[in-house]
Image (cartoon, rainbow, N blue to C red; front, side):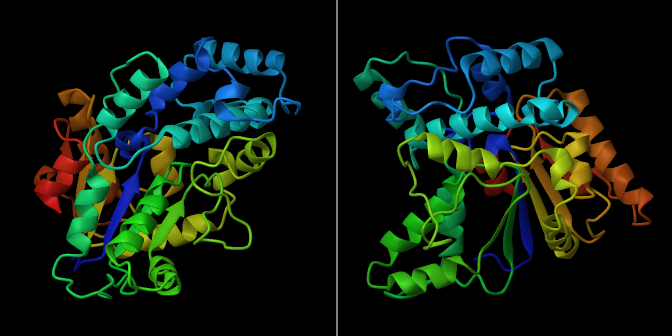
Length: 338
């Protein structure tokens, strides 16, 4: 049970345990020639269709992105608007490709077994542990009975995600649907629709429970029309600043008693989109993962957050009140602080 207003801010690392690439891994997949291959046979794209972006356009994007030495594809597109359309197309492909391979639960073992069966190379995935299941376990603690659904209507749980994928939404749907098999589909959907999940830069497509009239099934075969649709649903940093949805995200953060940054990179441009950290109440608790960061970098993040709170006329948080953990993945952080 979650009894305090808690907001999770999700970066790419939060989806890694389920087979999605981190920001750095996404960059590698894009700039490495053999990685970005539109394999129509494997991914069931209609081989007769003509991709919207020819190989030459994709190659130009890859070359420029590589030579820019900018680590974030979002930042690269924001700085180079002419490349944004093809960049969104590439992101859509990579997200949908990862979705086709994604698993919940012991993802690393399952992906390894799948790769072995298909004769694909085995690569270290560094997926991390399954925090979705841990959080779900906490949400249904104490609920007994065939229709004891968790109550999301109190607003104590919300997610603000910088990711385009739909793994979180799909996980919650599956978990509820098969935890409470005697509950009607309608009630499951009503419960889910009370759960706030905001995609800061867009979501590739809605699932059926989100929009029964215009949805795309999870793990749908990759088709040209789906690629185009998913690309159109992706927004850049510049475009997000013009999107009124960020006001709702800021309101959630302003009201939160606890804020968890999971798999988040703390990039200043992403913090600025949500007016972080100044929007956060002085009474809230802040915790975050920082896998791959060095101790000095963690101190800089803590100081930036602390100084940002102070600059907005809030009482300065002590470093004890801002827990940024470089030795913890998402699951370990939640087990220690949730």
